[in-house]
Length: 542
Ligand SMILES: [Zn+2]
Image (cartoon, rainbow, N blue to C red; front, side):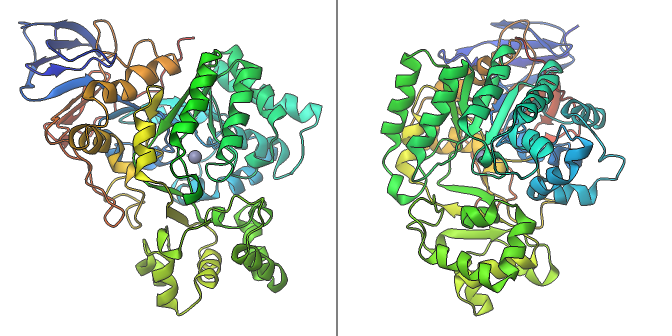
């Protein structure tokens, strides 16, 4: 018995091959037929005239871990065609949590976790392993499928807290053991976030040892590199050296050329990656299609000050002597600091995430505008709001050039990763703006970069979103439209698909994507969310 029949749509199968006309039949979550003019007694028939049908989009880089607990319908994700999210990125996964590690873990998780800890009941907030966390999430249900990574910073926070040193033999073995346990239970690899502490305390040897463990399981090592600005090339060298030494399959996260000094270096950067591939390294990357990035406000401060985490940072700012040193370093940055503000004015940074009642009107203002409203010097104002909001603020920094975004998108080894989270316009995160990539990434590639700018073909774009990430992750049953594979499917209108979310008005769903199916079940049907939660944690096919 066929559950679903999609007729008259143009098929883009995810392999990068040219589109073709065919009907698609789905039964019990599986694509059963891909053929011309299928005539089966379908329970539900969709007329796809004028639409493209492609595999569901695989978002290679997200931070939905906690947010899916509160927003399982994943509106910001499925409305742009995402059916699978790779979670646990930038070194931060919600597990494992050892008893001895729970305090450093929470400190480390303050940006990601605090909002959710406040809203989750204590019995929901008591997992130990990452696998345990996903079992709970699966029990609640999610609209999207999940591909979890283990966060290196999470491992380190558990075993070494915020210590800035090389692990001793015993600590290294404990981190490897924790990682092994999660990989055995189906995690897809390891992520690192080497600008974030405590992950940034790790040196290359530690990361290489952990990457070897990942290699043994044929997982991936996804890295938010040590620099994306001034020291970008050195950071790429480090990532490639880890891949070379360990043999691990490397995924460079959100590849970009940050800060004006690096603008125009996209071609050189890609040449380095191509050379590594010619040398036999398994290296890919992902990208989001915007010229601004989004991270914790903590990252604006000098390394020595931020490396103890947010609560330590507040102590530093509350002590007049250390506060002056922070200010002095920010006015005259040391040359060895990868200062995120380098060559950028205060009008290029927006701060968001204010929760104090009197600060709510500041949400989304640039530092320049916020400081003006307070009658303060911008630097003073940043320190003040950071302390008032206990460090739990985010910033959006307009630090990339459009040309590099385009150059990187045209590269054949790149995928798409939103670096977003599951949110909805009426959910717990809706009171504050978010980066528009949360809602718009995939639709923006299809609308702005394929249709309007003709940067890449539609088939190439879909391949970057489906077949390529599925192969990288070892998802043999997804990422292509083929008989026998899982029915994660998206129908979009190539003439109208577009992102709507902006930096000023960010909680806006993408348009032109009327149908999304996850494991054969409709999540978006005729433009409406069905409320169904058919997602599951996926299995790695090693
Ligand atoms: Zn990152």
